[in-house]
Length: 86
Image (cartoon, rainbow, N blue to C red; front, top):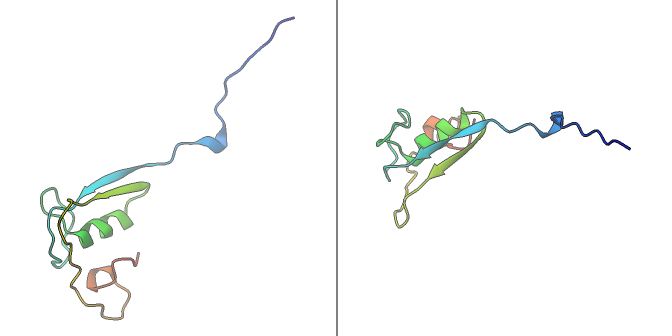
């Protein structure tokens, strides 16, 4: 008796798109201008992550306080106070 084994990819087990790694390097909340290496606020990292496919990582330094100080304007814009809006 012979046994035939075939290893076929399962279409429902595809890998998720790889995400980005954002390192927050400033604790203030400037007007968003992009999350650049060495110049990235928490708001900028969230905004960048919102536009990137996949599962992203936002890294914060331990022991620091990150302030989101831009007051919401009521227009559901992440650049003017609502960092969760996409």
